[in-house]
Image (cartoon, rainbow, N blue to C red; front, side, top):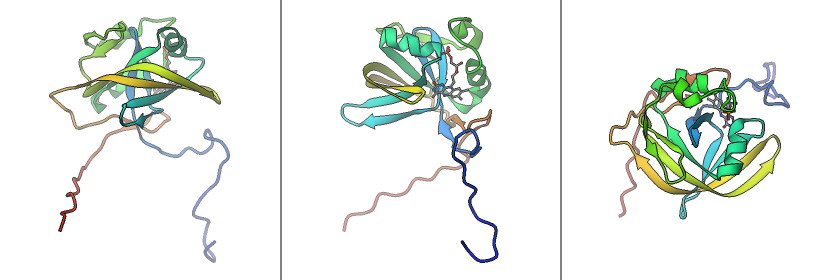
Length: 180
Ligand SMILES: Cc1cc2nc3c(=O)[nH]c(=O)nc-3n(C[C@H](O)[C@H](O)[C@H](O)COP(=O)(O)O)c2cc1C
């Protein structure tokens, strides 16, 4: 530690205590017509393109995914954060979340999962593997189709936990290194 100074870091041993901001791109996971906000997700393979989402066992979506083995991930622009927040407070086995959301449906994929019109882009996913660890199950999926909206918002929805949403203020494109 540096002399005569307060420690720079405070250390916690649970996620609940460490109320740190970790902005994560957030999407609406649709299994059939049920919508679940998801921020714990990541790409896991480039070719074939595979994507993983971590879903808590107690969520209705977990049971739906086990049954239907497919979903869409709808990446909505930041402007929809209030709707996403509302979708995270209710459960699809009790309420019709799609009609409550007021979101317009562009269509359904071949597995009857909805595609939301407001999305910047949408991944159509088929579950190819699962991995249970802790209180979430990781559903790994082949992305069979990627739908890219011609009108991009350039305002991704970032969720930092505890009701905090943000978007990107500034972006930079680093030039590719020229070959000499
Ligand atoms: C922004 C946001 C992100 C969330 N991310 C996840 C996630 O990645 N995995 C998860 O299981 N739950 C996540 N949740 C919680 C679920 O969305 C929430 O429990 C929801 O009500 C479950 O709906 P369901 O029971 O209809 O599946 C998130 C909630 C919010 C608001």
